[in-house]
Length: 69
Image: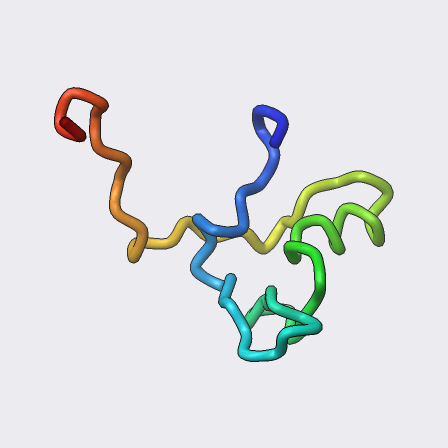
């Protein structure tokens, strides 16, 4: 992923669906997709990232490499 691009895994609205054909979903926009929701938005919005991105408080911050030993 390019720097500055929205990462759906860090969004509060992103969810993984049970549908094998459409495994990625956005609760805020109400759709499921084969691609990450931001990629669908970029296709529809002439390359612009999702404007409904909201940082998720569920995702723990990455641990420093020194702790991974």
